[in-house]
Length: 166
Image 1: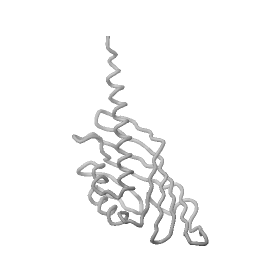
Image 2 (image 1 turned 60 degrees about the horizontal axis):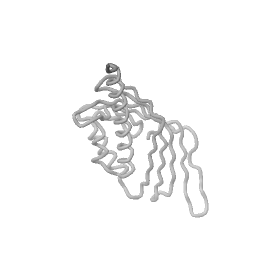
Image 3 (image 1 turned 120 degrees about the horizontal axis):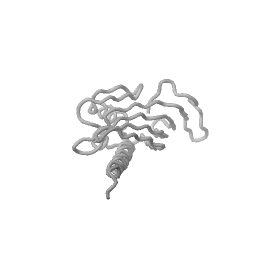
Image 4 (image 1 turned 90 degrees about the vertical axis):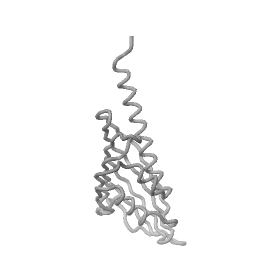
């Protein structure tokens, strides 16, 4: 006899794994400066994106344009590391999750190092091409900005970021 709950549990596990892979692709596309892969992580049509001072967006194409303009430069060496995922599958097509983020940026042009810690709150939707982000908000918690010099390092900011975003 087959456990009727077994299929449901397997589907939930598969959805969680697919969402983890989606978030990994999103973060890697940021670090690789890949606007097409970045855009592919979001649903088509209306979205709800709140990245604080970076902007609020109701369209993933508008966010992708800002990403390409602001971050896709060889002097911007970024590393996004998300951990501690809490993923709740709400239905066969809807889920939500939260992630901790450690972000590091070395700007070789301005000779600065920025480290940022915070939390993502995401919503996901299953589409014909897999799970996609339909809403996301980033809330910064900590920030460290250092000025790098050949002979010294100077702290420009340490503590809670003043209305910053990741």
